[in-house]
Length: 637
Image 1 (cartoon, helix red, strand yellow):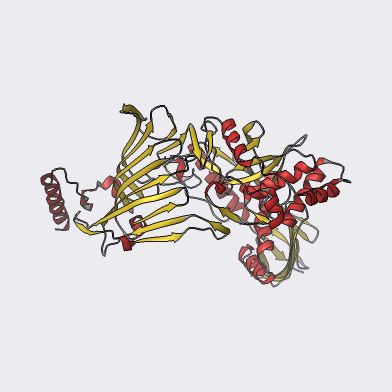
Image 2 (tube, one colour):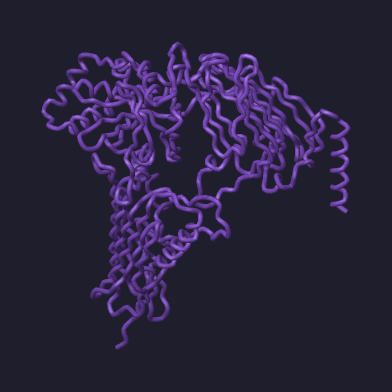
């Protein structure tokens, strides 16, 4: 009965659509099941038109109609439009339709809120957002938004990603770019089913793209980022101008030349500070020693704040201002550090980079502004020294998970040059642990665990040291120490000076170290570093397999067993070698000591989809080996 009723409603809706002529209908029941399955919302129509009027200005008009299917999709009923000194919102319109596609209400001016979009760490920004939202009492319903913005920041052209969220589907979306005659458009296409169509209309060159019937994208375990899996068109200018600073983006070299214009004349250091720097380095023998001393001087003298105002989003404040005020953003602090190094006769480069653990890959063959941060690169005879200038605690030369293993654009006197920052191999990111445990016949014990964390593995604990008080540190250790039952009697965390290393010392009570059964003790010798899970095996894997980080773990555990006990059963040594990593573990008796040694090495990399089963099997084997037990039995007299 219910199916017949739905079919009847669908027929009525289709009939209404045909009678309406050119008037569109947004009835929810007309959505194809192939699109609605697994979706929280469906884009019915999206029209994006980007019109460049000159190297200085452009407008963008977006019209989007989206049907919200359930509670999880209600975020799509809200429109968020950012703006600032260089980008203004011309208008916002909105309409709400019920499940039958009937107009229910229109967006009012009072429904559009205006908020500051200043970051928590910023001293001041001119970033703001307009937020427009409509909602309906029952699902599904449809919202239509149309808005237009005007930009005077032509360093950035728009990018088009019609499928911009998980559990989202698209019926139809179009993208059009209108360029003035004589101004070519640079673009990069990703997974678009049809390449751009290009035609001349009047005095404009018109570029168009279209997609239809895009079902929701499902990410896979250890798969690529969502942004890699969807159709995407990036656009960029050949020539542009921002607040009087003109440049070209056709090459990385020309991009660097534009940045040099912004930086020009902003590296003047006051004479008093010059004297301090020269006195600081006069007795230091090597360039490396001088770099580290000047870097520490900068760290002790400044603090990081973010200030983003107009061209100030790309142009650093003068070095003299940072010197007098003692603060600056990443651009200002990097420019200041570069100027201090110059006083000591040390050549360095202002360097643009995309910072963050998400590690977005730079498109090497598509020069444009793909960066969100600035650091300093100091060329040396062997390896460059990279300096993160926004932290008072960072070690000279350490890039880590935020800026390591990616491309950076060096701003040299000759322009931009794309280079790689240091890659981290497994033996750069080590956890090395030794544990001494005394076990009694009741199955409880005490232990001392000493662990050195280096490279990326030290970062989390270094953050705990920097930002948590002792009570918060202890709570964090309880939460992040992986032992089935334990109590921390004392602890110590220590950052090694001038090295990316944290030392951890734990004194532990272990009330349920072993299970007791009669005269036998059952103990899992891997006390603190057990791999506990593996993803499910997929019948058909679509995408590449990505292991995100290289690391090397070594755990050595020495148990002093109770008097009168001996090993009755012990697991065999395990050794596994795969494309993803290597594992080995062994346990043996040496007198009254039970010695367990485990090593796990994993390698960052991308692998073919068909290798996913190999990864799952490897992790399952590691998990099983980590859970193996030793049986100790009391000797009979």
